[in-house]
Length: 73
Image (cartoon, rainbow, N blue to C red; front, side):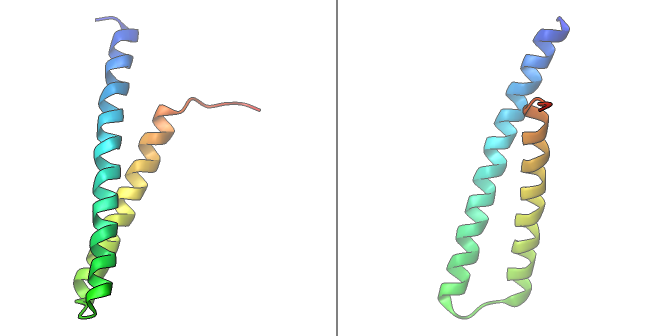
């Protein structure tokens, strides 16, 4: 397999992972909103979910940086 083919395959894998991470991020966000609307919020669970959401956001940013070429202005 050539370097170009390997790079293309890697980008496809990263795009799939990015899609999954974004989906997970949205799901957790909806769960956080639902917990707040219920009114009986388990603060420990809420803090954990927010932490997971931030970790996902960081992973999303890293993958997007890998997929976007550096543009020198």
